[in-house]
Image 1 (cartoon, rainbow, N blue to C red):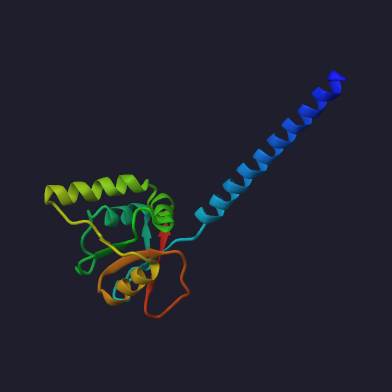
Image 2 (cartoon, helix red, strand yellow; image 1 turned 60 degrees about the horizontal axis):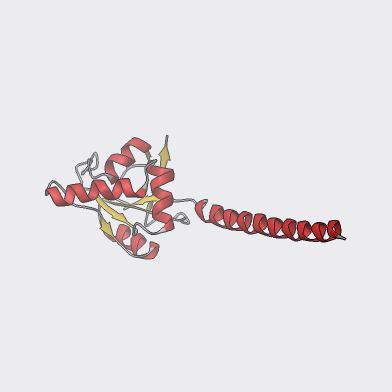
Length: 156
């Protein structure tokens, strides 16, 4: 009788373990689908750049390159650091962690050597800001090709 009781508890343990594995797998796959959103780099139509390398993009977002090749000042727009789109952009496009970018911006601001990019709250606000600001650059989840915006491809 004791062996039947033991088997019953063993089955309960197995059920609990299987449920736990399914929950962990579900959470992992849910976050994976969120992190796989494509992020597009966009610029004002006056920016005559079709593609940038990761290194060039990193220089722009670390505020080391402040003018386009035609002399127009670069105006950088970003989403809040907690935004999934911002985190994906940093990791996938810039190949840095968001906190590293925050540190660079804080150093520039607190040392008086530069200014941090302009933070906007939503992707819609970012898109409108880039459309309205000559020399502007930003990023959003995805975009349908528009005449009013320049989508920049990133080459590694």
